[in-house]
Image (tube, rainbow, N blue to C red; front, side, top):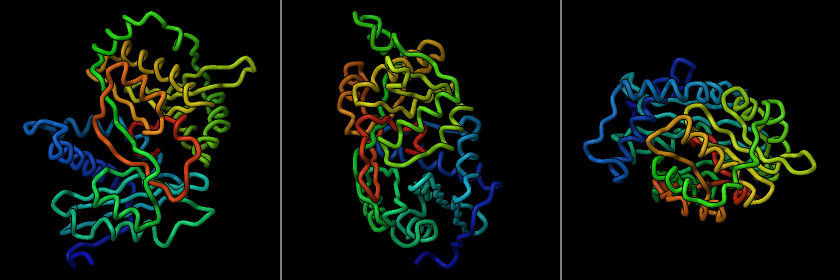
Length: 317
């Protein structure tokens, strides 16, 4: 039971920015508390606005999905927590569950899940979530029918160090055969390759990425894509998928090279599942380190996470 002063209502489009900022602030606080950021690390309203403008399109896209469920918890008129579930094909993903630090451990998250993930998953409609590694979080999610299937690692590397390492490599053929696909071609190839890796289709998501990102690909002798990777103009790399685990590496390297040389961020960031041994080994050789460990939790096995690279930002797998 949550406190009587806390109310839960359906969220609306006008709540999107406020709940996004709540998530941004809470994750920053968590990063400081867990030692990922310095104690004196600051994040002001200008930083929050930049982040909102960067990801507003994706947030609004997710909120516009026909079967989404979005709920907001308030106390005294102030937003203290929210949750959102979005369905793609035969899978419902909990894209957001965020509770302000002062209200954590009081049953608010469970109350939100009872509104958005009522009942149990079924054979025809699964559930998936990307969860932090905190025992309290993992225990909560298992009560709603999902179990850990793989680790979900946020990896980072200093851009200058990455470029220096890449310049010393004698074999540059890995990324040399990568081409950019037209949006229509990219979406068609994603429709073919992704269900084999994740077990469900997400055509609307890739149609959105086709408007928002560039798709890099390697193409086989038969003219069909062997691997695909979305990359944005804001340095977001992923998702990516390949016909085999090793096939993902060339498109990932091409995306990293593209971001490092044209956008020049201070750091490069990607996500990977812990089953992606080939990719993790290659990234480790390039100096990438684990920045933030999480879990992929699902109500059914996912057939090919070793040849799939998660989305950045991690609002969806």
